[in-house]
Image 1 (cartoon, rainbow, N blue to C red):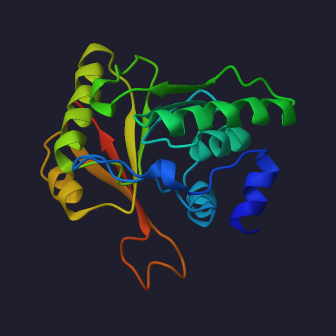
Image 2 (image 1 turned 30 degrees about the vertical axis):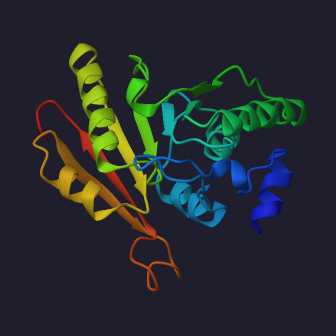
Length: 205
C-alpha cells in the first residue's frame, strides 16, 4: 500500500502542506512518519490496548489514528501549530464516522510540548525529531518528574533520531536503550531510518 492508500483506509488526510512550516529555531516543520516505517515498527513493537501513547509533534494525527486502528490504545497528540491541530480534529471527525470502535480515547492538545502536563496513565512517548535538543530535554525531564510521582513502565519511541538526542539519552543515568529497529531497504541508504526505543527507570535499569 502507498501513503494515500493508508490515509484512505483510515478516512483521514495527513499529507504535508504549507501549514507544517514554523518560524522557530526550536520546532521543526511538519513531516508525518511514513506509513512504511510505522507498519514495520508495529510488527516488532507491540502496544497493548491498556497503553497510553503521547505523540509529541503530532501534526495531523497520523500516528494517533494508526495506533488506535491497530491496537485500540489511548493516544494523545500534542501539537503547537494551530492549523495542524485543527486538521487533526477534522481527521478525528472523519475517522470516527468510518470506524465502528469508540474513539473517545483519542485526544489532541494544541500546546507547546514542554508545557504539556504528563498524566499518571501515559507510559509511551513518541518522537519524530520534532524539536531541538533543548526542548527535548525539558520534555524528558517532565516525563521523569511524572515517573517520580507515579512509578510505572515508561518507554520512549524515537524515529529518525538526531545525534544530539542520542548523546543525551545514552548519557542519562535513568535511561537505557531497549531496542533498535532499522527499517529494511531504507536503513542501508540512510542510517537515520531506524527506531530507537529507550526505557526510563528510576533504578536506572
